Image 1 (tube, rainbow, N blue to C red):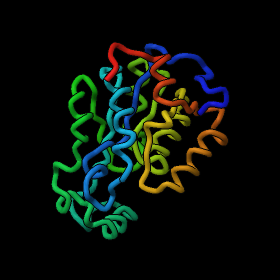
Image 2: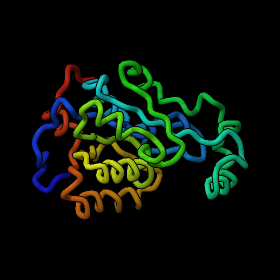
Image 3: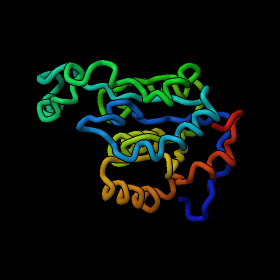
Image 4: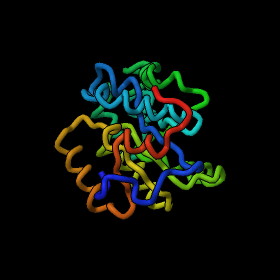
Length: 208
């Protein structure tokens, strides 16, 4: 959490947005990419989304259709993870988990084909045009797509709030290491707070 246990720059304003990273069936169910403790953080993600469904964007990681697809090293990546291509998984597995899918709309979906939602997209322009100045991040994985989302938001100059009990990974050791980095190496640019702390200052219209 933040060193003083609170949001150091004050409550998120009306121009904050919640980016929930890749909370999809293929990471929640019995696949090679399953995150075993996704169910542990899901209630917190639901609570934040329920408070601000119209201020939530769900990113979805979209794999290639079949092994052999993809550009450069991504082609090799999907040779290794051929079980996670759409032809092997089935199209439905890229969907959000049901507990979150029910918020769409008014929540929105933003598809991406790489770890970062900022690469090869107009996400920054979309958010700037909507007056967004603060990005609140939840989802998975802490050390992969969440990391890419956080660093991209930092690079674009957004205020970044990471919700510590609403992110997860499939690897405990690297999750813990990454949380230490967020807290210490990025202490000036990433505010780390719990769900309860966030919602005390960004309550919204509903609590799940």
